[in-house]
Length: 145
Image 1 (cartoon, rainbow, N blue to C red):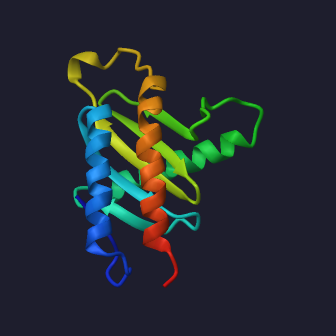
Image 2: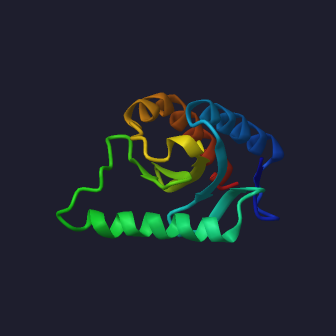
Image 3: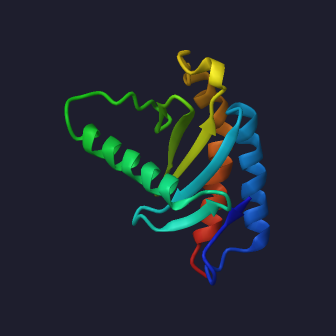
């Protein structure tokens, strides 16, 4: 479940719709755990209620790292859907760039599969429709009144 800053002007109905889409992400990324959405200025728009500051900071650090690497000649494995994934022993961090917004989330891994390769290209293809829907919701949430 998502939360936003007080006085953000985001309606509870839009947050409910957003959370419904996150439920679809959980079908693609088993053990989907926690998420955050930031805007292009780095301001938090939405976070999951169970997301601690340490994970937010780690996500932002990984995003910053990706941006710095993309300025060099090195490839970071960013695909045409503007996403990247970083696989750890116990969790995977996934990041989707949606216009001026960034959706970052963590999914836990099964302990007996820690050394297994994860092909995220199929997951990214499954995310296309969800990302399109999230784009519309995020634009509605931030539309100037």
